[in-house]
Length: 272
Image: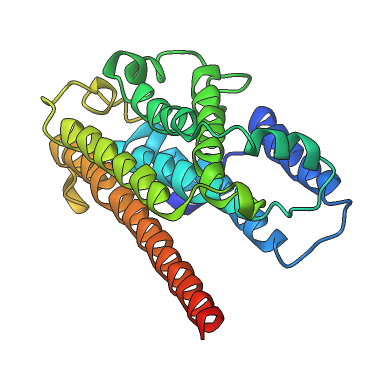
């Protein structure tokens, strides 16, 4: 039996997509790497971990919790890092400014939260694994590829009102706190529903085909039954997601208080 760490899977669709993202970003910044680019390429690195590493192998073949961890990393960590890596001065500035000027953050909220909910509807989720692979047997199928792309795009759209490169068009402090905290609530509800869903709701992970020989190790050595794995997946959606949202909310709140204090100091100086 091969080591789990040897299951790095690189296929043409995902490789093309990731390379395309990198080339598009380099073109946008005039092929001049900046300190800010570290955020973008950190996001790319996380994306590779989620779609090409043993984490993806486990999520596709054995563990709902691994699949869920990939989702959380893509939409709440990789996507915001990529947005944070976009400088204000870039070749797509006019287009990005036009998008930023559309003061409809609720649309971005519905896209981010809605896409996460969509892919965890049991009927859709179970059909992710029913389609044949694209190309070789080790490639992901088309629906799974669309899932990854849509999660990344949804994460970018959701985080754009909060951390876009044009500070004057970011969502204000208190509104940003509401924006993030309500997303936390809805992800918590989804996590709770998954945690307490009847075993077999996500039947792919209950009726596993042990083609690689790791099931006994996972069940006996790791002590991860199908029920525990599903509960762990729900908890990953619930706890880490909320922690990320609430941490970002606290940062926005602190910045809002600092700005208000600065305004008071300026007004006080003028009065004196």
